[in-house]
Length: 135
Image (tube, rainbow, N blue to C red; front, side):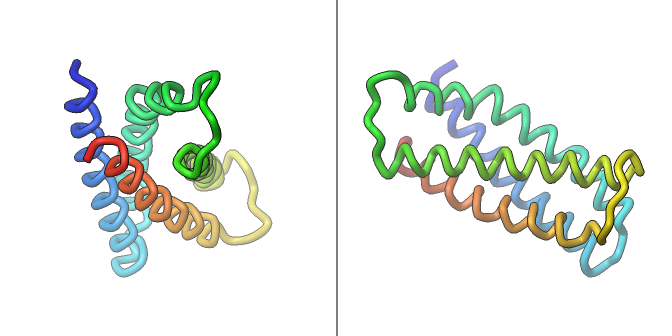
């Protein structure tokens, strides 16, 4: 498939997932429907993981191969990548805690808020990366 079309499709998916994140935060924070929030996030994050593996990872590997000098753009890509992995890690942690597979010494809410904040930062960086590469 044409890389530009694949990138645009992934960009649209990321915007939709960001909307799902906002909606999920709303149903958790204002409606207090944590079960529904968890269900929504258990659909959204696997879609995020698939898009990261299928589209974003090959692109990042192409931009960071041997002989590529470290620039601010490459550094931004690595930070974006690392923050995305942190979101996924926090999601796995929250799911394990929510299902009782691991025990928490404190509340889960700070971890979930951290994941949401990191996701927002990662999304903004991703929009910038998309604009630099494709626009």
